[in-house]
Image (cartoon, rainbow over all chains, first blue to last red; front, side, top):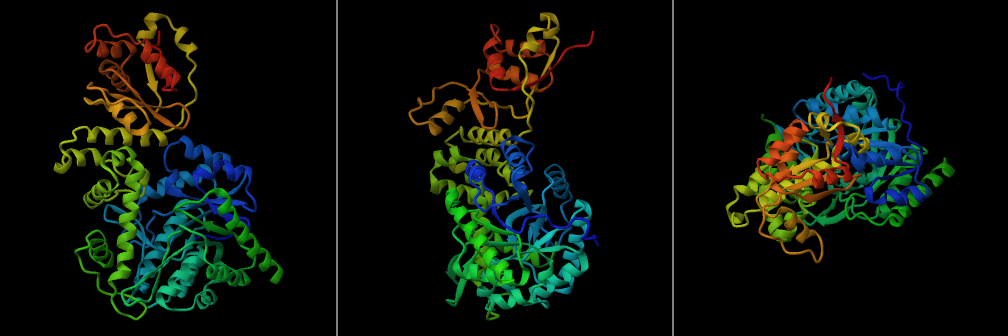
Length: 287
Length: 252
């Protein structure tokens, strides 16, 4: 188990944004309340060029969080050691304040399926995910923040609740957590539980970062609401409510606005960051 | 490999397959539509990755045809690594063997060019090369020297008017492609890769140089195609576009 005190999270308790290359100039000239950015690790695993040059410029002005989407920590098969090596190289030269990944799988056999796929929560999957997190933290020499998934369905064989599963992973590995409250709202709606109840049962002391973002509306075969994690629009009002509820428990924390599809002009994303700043202020005032 | 994820993966890329057992909605009942969200996510993600990798192919084929092609490609060639920036490397061979598009013979070369542009974009950086260094070397030693090209430099051989086809589809008002063989050099002066048309003799020179031949060796390779080969225009292009990383002169 990694000694978590060695590399405490250093992201500022302030708004951050998911970085998009088209915002490079606007973000640097007029960041508004944005104090940090998050990048998807896999987009910066080339050898150089504009992606690396932009990151080198941005890290002088902002704290950086590296967010992996390809490690397949929830996979049934062993971790991809080549990919771990690429990650280690990126973290080595970029020296980000934080590294996070997902409670999900995406690689099967030799195939990468480019989506965050769900896993059942059982004693067996718990042991395997804990082992994978241990390997990642040992290889990278730093604490990992693990993000809760957005769920569209459940596994009948699950014997653990997601919050207990995450709490036990924290206990066994010393990892931290990335609490995506948009994902909580989506999963709670889709699987019919209360999002506030999820947050109240969540191992809140392990939170090193919070995500908000937009989702789409659909319906399942029975006409029940089915929310889709699209990251393609503004964060919905009930998700802002859930963020404020969450911040009551965590106190000030790094809050990231995710917007990955139909990416808007900078002022619109900046306005979302302003809303996160307001939520953070009210949390500070209320605590 | 057996297990939940094998069943999940099999049903994910094949809509004819039934949803794996044990996947349920909030009411504990199996659910086709909820599983379809994952199916759709994967299809959309892979299609979008191919769309951004092959803008000229998409333009040549049209949105709908390209989307069909992308779905077929994704089922035949799912990504082999999380490095999605290089997804699509098998597209030239896939197109070459794809009967419905066999009548458009240049499509595989277009795919090669688009992959080369992507590789160039992510290639390693080099320090600027000072052209003065060339003039400080005596002609004899120069011909025995070896140029190292920048990692971003990509050569795309073609018997088709590949550069003209690219330009006709990417630049408004560009001339129609001529009936000539047109290998393409991809260069990246700072951050944005750009294609340049070469003669076949120039392409032979670049290929020989990339293979580690001396300037004399590269000259021979080009002259075997064009006895009157003159390096000057190509060397000017390579210097202007930051294609040269270094030169190694022979030890005395």
